Length: 140
Image 1 (cartoon, helix red, strand yellow):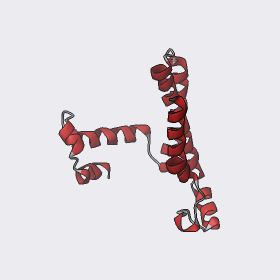
Image 2 (spheres, one colour):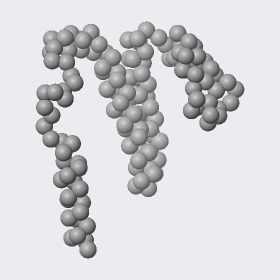
Image 3 (cartoon, helix red, strand yellow):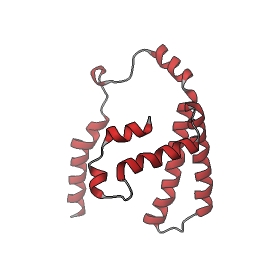
């Protein structure tokens, strides 16, 4: 029975999954062929990229702690979460600095946006049927 199941899995992988990793032809490439332009944009935005990569990696480390708690039954490592939260704030500070706003401005804007979206109370209906123009107006 196990052998039969393994054959089904291998068949699925070879027909569905492995095809995702086949070489990409030139028609499906979406990145710019302008390497000099890419280099220029990278130089102009290196702090934004640094911040975005940092936010992503630190967020993943926080998520990994929750994975270990939920799926592996490990104790929650609050010391590590404290450290990773500090690291996340560091990269968010770089992002905010580069874009020219403070944490306070971002938080106040977010509260205003959520009030525009939900009023005084969250509802599932308001979460689904959002007035994006109204939210965007608050953010400007």
